[in-house]
Image (cartoon, rainbow, N blue to C red; front, top):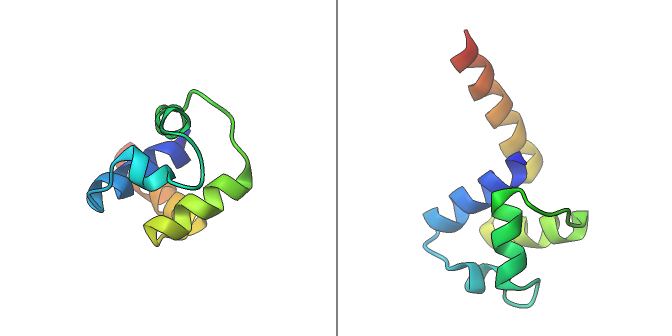
Length: 73
């Protein structure tokens, strides 16, 4: 799941632990599974994590698609 990779990238960039990112949103275990693409999660969690990371997930996903297509060329 690309969203999980994006969340992990920006979490590490912000120098946040999984516990800090998930505080009040979800558990460390859930953050870990999201980042590794091992679980389903609600759109509300994506919104809350994105806000905490100060990103717009839709824009990040579009950028990732663009990058992937450039690598394929």
